[in-house]
Amino acid sequence: TLFARHPDAGLLTAVLTALNDVLTRRVIERVLADRGQPPAPWCWVVMGSGGRFEQTFSTDQDNGLIFSAASAAEAAALRSWFLPLGQAVNQALDRCGIPLCAGGIMAGNGDCCLSLDEWKERFYGWIRTPDQTALLNATIFFDYRPLFGDLALAQELRRELLALTQGHPAFQRFLAVNALDVAPPVGVLRDFITTSAAGKRPGIDLKKSGARLFVDIARIVALAGGCAEPSTVARLRSAGPAWGLQRGEVDSAVQAFAELQ
Image 1 (cartoon, rainbow, N blue to C red):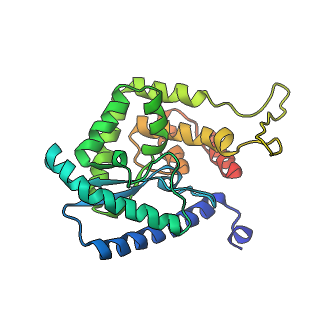
Image 2: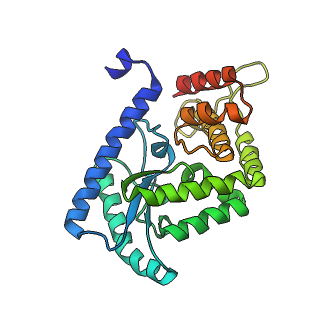
Image 3: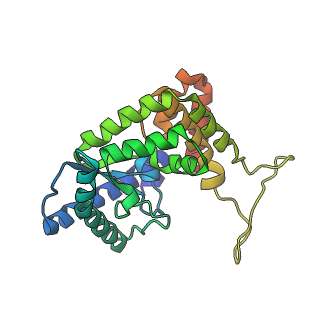
């Protein structure tokens, strides 16, 4: 009904994301009611398409947890409290119909349940030594958005992250080269290049071979231009012109991205 009245994919994905946000907040509240209040300031963040307000009907979990700790020893001690919290929320969301992430990008995983300083060091490492793993992580972790708890923790991380990415053009170049590895599925004669999987008809993955092209370039111009906006359209409109994209090019990209969505 919503699509029939407002044929705008951006509106639909924003509504789906908002519904998942409300569900996640409620799940966290119920888990906290059972476990008690956390021993330190903390923040739950969503990543990937959820972080960009671009969730579709088919989505899994991409989330993490940031907490405040004064030292590495304190961080290790606090993690023993926050990790079970993350695992409980992940399992509850799975029971509600949002599947667990096959790649383990979840707050219940020790690699995604870190103190603020540990998150900073992790991002610093990815930016300073942008190997293939770092570039893969960038496509998910750099699109985070605070959802519950002390939002200031995530905002502080964002400020330092943007300052760092702006000062490392080599990292921006690696992101661009990685983005160019994905070509539109169009042949020499403007015909479509399809792929087939076992038991399925040949087709085109509109996410990996279509929407991703716009998501990647929007992320690059946002990180290079110091733009804190999480969504693809907002990034293109905010940072695109400042980074050399003409207004008409931005409008065309936004329209094409919406059509693919």
